[in-house]
Amino acid sequence: MTFLEGVVFFILTICFLLIIRIYVVIKSGSKYKPGTKGPVAVLIVAGSGGHTTEILRLMDSLASAYTPRHYVIADTDRISEEKICTFENSKLSNSESQVHNCPQFTICRIPRSREVHQSWSSSVVSTLNALRFSIPLVFKLRPDMVLCNGPGTCVPLCLAGLLLGILGMKKVLIVYVESICRVHSLSLTGKILYPISDYFFVQWSQLRDKYPKSIFLGRIV
Image (cartoon, rainbow, N blue to C red; front, side, top):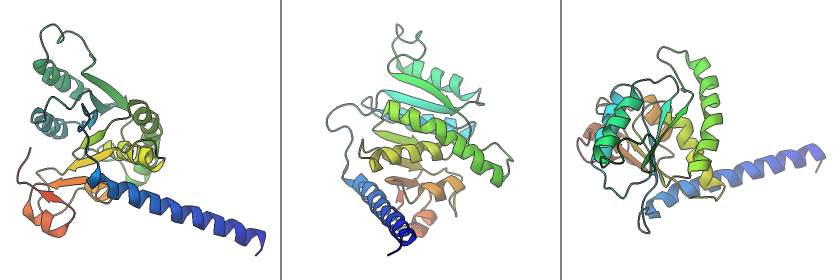
């Protein structure tokens, strides 16, 4: 075997082992039960507009055990922060409601993966840039779960969470809730995250029939 053939064989072996590791990490999600030993640290991805409204409705139905809550928004999003603070302050006592970024919740910002009407080619570059900020953030917070419902910003954050598991540092549960607006087909974000999510919720039976891995519980947001 020549040196070049040896290098190619080594690279292919590493790629093969990496694929197996990714498969094992993804499949282990159904066995992982966060919260059985205490509170669940959750990273919530809030997009602009309807995405934030829907994710906050979902958060309102979760038990108080989901704490601390780390919200991540795009650095160009000026509206979601106000909505999140209003929502969280309504759940806190009067003494805590005056403290911004109190221990129960934090708000973090990363670059947006894709702006409205941005070309797909430039979106690849901006997503990689967002991933550059997402990896250190997720590695620092080490959430038990990433909860998202469609904004492009959640893609690099979910990939960073998956990387934690691949490296054997911590299993991060990836939970995706498809928008109520998606009746017959998944959003682009949904199509990207469908293979790597641990729990993938859809809100129309038509999607459940098309995507057997998905979970249909009716309208949940």
